[in-house]
Each structure stands twice: as C-alpha cells, then as structure tokens.
Length: 154
Image (cartoon, rainbow, N blue to C red; front, side, top):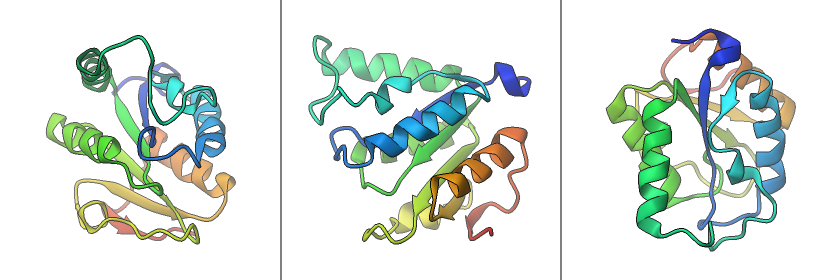
C-alpha cells in the first residue's frame, strides 16, 4: 500500500439515501484530506442534494465511481444513514480486496445492517463524536486495522 500521505482514499456516504449527515461527511473528508488524496470529496459537498450529480448519466457515475474504487488504496464508509449505493460500494471494495473501514454513529436512531456488522472482511467501528471517528480513521489509514469485523474500541 502507498505511504500514508500518498494514499488514495475512497470515501463513501449516502447521497440518494439521504443527506442528513452531509456536514459530518465534510468533517470526515476534511480530516481524510490531511491523510491522503480523497477521490470522492464531492460526497461531502453541501450543494449536492439527494438527486446526486447533475449533468452526468447514471451509467457515467457508475463507471467513474468504479474506476475511483479500483484505483483506491482503501475505503472509508460512513454507514449510519442506510444507502444502497454505499452498500454496493462496500461489496465491490471487498471483492476488489480493498481494506474497508465502516463507521457507524451510535445514538443516531438507526440500526447497523447485519450485512455490514457481520462481515468479517470489514473493519467496523462505532463512534459517538467526530473526534472518535477521526481516531478510528487515523488507526485504519496507518494500517492498524486491529480485529476484523464488529469491534467497539474506546
């Protein structure tokens, strides 16, 4: 894998599934940009609404995002807001052998999908604050994946 500062990071977060967490995505993407090159920073754009990218076909979005995913060194997915697209990206990353960190915010009134929580090939971390999420991200980007699967770290 590439050195820390030169890592290509694919950030996944809900777009059509809902934009309630877009400000949080902005914080996480901002943090990730200090650790590497974020290929999908547009996910955190507050101007992007639930209809997604304008002026580009769905097929072009799929091809573009899959190319980014294939070129990424790792994937960080915020999975609190359920999203078919994020689930698809995680499954594709798993098939490609990419390390995947799935972040789930406790107390958000949602339940983490069993398909994410139960997948031993993912690193799943629960957090309550953006600072906790950033700590999980830092460890993950350093390659300190810890135990695979569902894991509650302090």
